[in-house]
Image 1 (cartoon, rainbow, N blue to C red):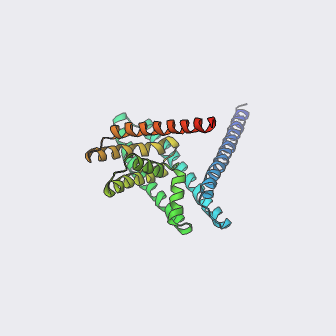
Image 2: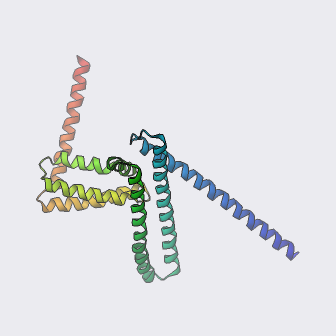
Length: 230
């Protein structure tokens, strides 16, 4: 009787492992499809005439999404284990050390990715890939700053550009849309501090900009009404 129970327990456990493996395989297959489609959209914006090269670049980008996802999942699991297996004071210290060390690995993933892209794409196209992975926040924000503050000096523009460029490099490696936007938010804070030291009050600038936008929208509405009435 005990022998039968052991056999049944083994069979149930084996079946559970098979189901888990099948679910994992399905999830990985589904994720691969998502990142491949995401990568294809980015590649489409690059206007690559060579079909084979377009496929190669698509796969490089999709593979990067997969690598980043794997990295962040492993890091989350390891941090969870550290917190679980250690008292809080020690866990906090170990988590900081582990996170710092893992950043070196993430930086290498980033460098290897850019190296792969450089083999296939021009500088302008690589910019397109970076912006595609980060929702074009960098160019849109930089353009908005210049429209809000048309009197910025070349030095000030360069500093804003450098801040946003650095934010994008970090955002490319983030694991979610929220985390990507959080990187830009962090660097916008640095930009505000920098501009404040330069004698520019961003609150005043923002209010003036919002007023200008409202006036533009109102002018458009009035122009539309006038066109309809005529």
